[in-house]
Amino acid sequence: MADSPPLRWLYLDLNSYFASVEQQLNPALRGRAIVVAPVDSDSTSAIAASYEAKAYGIRTGTRIRDAKAMCRDLIIVPGQHRQYVRFHHEIVAEVERHVPVSAVCSIDEVACRLMDNENGIAEVRALATRIKAGIRANVGVALTSSIGVAPNRLLAKMAADMQKPDGLTILDAASVRSRLEALQLSDIPGVGRNMERRLAAKGIVEMRRLLAMGPDEARRAWGSIWGERLHWLLQGVDLAEIATERRSIGHSHVLGPEKRAPDRARLVARRLLMKAATRLRRADCRAGLLGLSVKAEPENMGNAKPKWHRTMRLPQVMDSVTLLAALDGLWTRMLSEFAHRRFLQVGVTLAELQAADAVQLHLFDGGVALGPREDARRLALSNAIDRMNTRFGRDAVTFGHDVAGATKSSGPRIAFTRIPDLAEFHE
Image: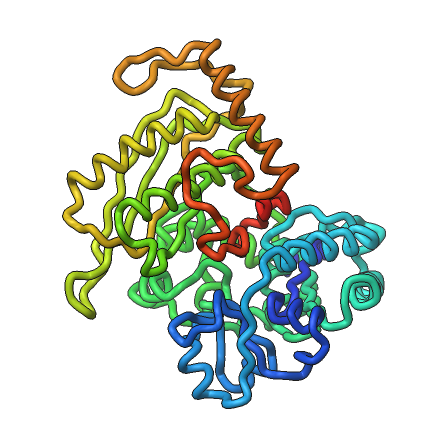
């Protein structure tokens, strides 16, 4: 590369994170083939596998029934999501002792921008060694990580994937082209099977061909500006990250057999909405749209599961009373339109979010005004209930919804790209 871009990003990717946390918490699991699952049931799938389990071909998404057949000594561990969040914050704090964290990319990945006095090859190796040693000493000996260093964040993430577990890969100007040419197109973050097929239709089936393309050709191949952007990133250019903003807050829940009747499923939906509403207020946002989705039991075994989804406009609100009234309206509509009476899953979403102090109140559904006084009264009630539940425990005060203990809930589930606040485990 002619301009020899400097090493600018360090990317840390924790190895088999959920499984490693379980091995840290229970030393008897270290060196054993374990799988983390939602519950210890053959019908569920693995959400994480230790490297010992991966040696048998077990991966995230493997059915527990199949995983047990692949490894007879496999240990199934129910997920402890509160612990994964706790360890995440401890690891971020440890990395911050050595270099500022510029971005938390997921629950098990962080990116750090390097300054000119810390981005030489020797300095980078020493920094990575200190970070790894700090995590082992101050967070947990079972928690290993792979670190990638490169001129931009995308290349640093790809470098971190090149040597697992416990690796360190540096993609400097002299090595980046040859190292990239050895990869598959699917090794590029965001390139899945559909994009691979689309590129193959254009004659692009290997990395060497992709790297030889110019920016205009790359843009045409992708059908968007992302293709041109990817071209420059793969050349080592450190482009500014595209700013993103929170677009929605939502929760969904798979229903057990005892919760699938409409009246019980409705109570679960109300509880999910209350969790989302509490997060909305903690983010100091108001929502302008409420969505309800349900998935019904199939009429015949093997058939597709029928789905229903609708949305309702809101007057940019953040209080629980108004949100529950809107949900009741959507639920009534669903029962009249959706000819199914046993539900497998329910989900709620709050969208069109705006900062609370930037919102003007509008007319509510049907033209009924939600004035400032009524809005303030409802919000004060919602905030008071939030405080009560924080002080005395989840569901100390409810709005007539399903109680978490009755569903054996262990708190919020982890999406890798969204780390719940620890407070959510009390909601």
